[in-house]
Amino acid sequence: MKLIDNALAKQSWADFMISWTGGVNFFLRGHSVRQTKYYHLVTSTTHGPPIPGVQDLDQTGPMLAIILRDGEHKKGETSRVAGSWRHRFWKKCFSGMMAMKCMKELNSMGDEEFNFRCRDRNSLPTWREKKIVSWENYDAHKKYFERVYEECSVQWAKKTHVRKQGIDRAHFKGASRDQVSQLSKHNKEKLDISYMPDLPPEAMHVAAGFSLRKGNEQSYYVPRAHISLDMWGASLDVITSIVFPKYELWKSQHSSENGDKTRAAHNFLYKTLPFLATVALQDGIYWVDELPDHEVSIYLTRKFPGYHEWSRNARRQLERQSETQEQNEIMIKFKCNW
Image 1 (cartoon, one colour):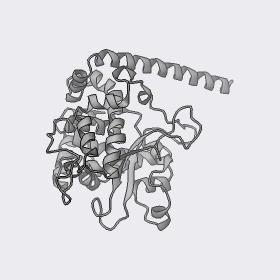
Image 2: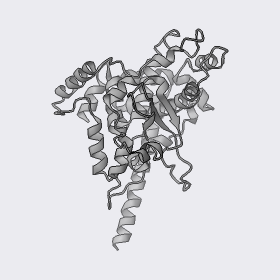
Image 3: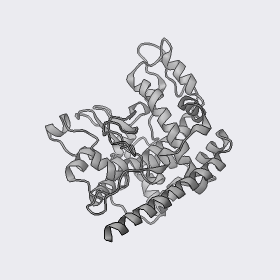
Image 4: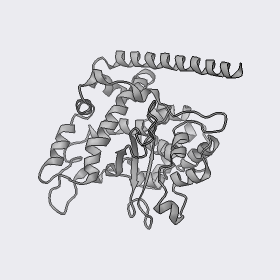
């Protein structure tokens, strides 16, 4: 965790963490990170994580994904989808880091920098031009990673090629070669590109920090993802408006006569931002505890009066649940051995 803690302490923490978690969680190339814009983000339940207690595999939770578009991310390739489930550890979670990045960055932008209206038929709304990281080229990306690695005495020959680490861990935790290849987009066969899912569940499962190795299988369960947010608003719309104060303005721009009517805009406003607002509050319980002076923690405690106490109670509740779960697992093992 030393590498992550060092990165989070820096002014440009968000760029590093988006790139690093993207590589570890779903094997995203450094080049693809630099080319991704906010309008490439999409939230969907089509290939989302299993819901605890729900046996119907057609009912899954939400997940954050990136549309890798032909000509924008890599020329000559069919547009594909990359993404991840929420990671079991908050410091390694792409969705969590993207939530905090959006909360920090989008709220600081002026209306002319980030809006959902078109000036004329030939122009794009500014939100479609904004990239998720600030590095303009490989050299800038590489130099930043080298500096963080050197400060932590980390030796990594691949520099920005973090996805090698993610792929190594996925294999180690029991994902099949085919599923890893499908998630990493290494597989070039027509069958895989045209018919097989870009988001294979086994690879997503292990990339989220859970094992599928025989004898050490772990069910996907991220406790913080089930914290109730009822205290902060009667609806998800209200919560999203507090996390993103310009949310209502953006929706009105979208619905106006010259608003961006694309599916990308609709998904970002009505699915992705509410999902990120939820993640920000749920992951934030650990930010304010472990990083109380971080700009993310300061923002959350200012926007949500009483957030410190609520977070403390939420952490205690999750700790009690974890203790109960461990005791149950010990009893099951004891009965099996008996």
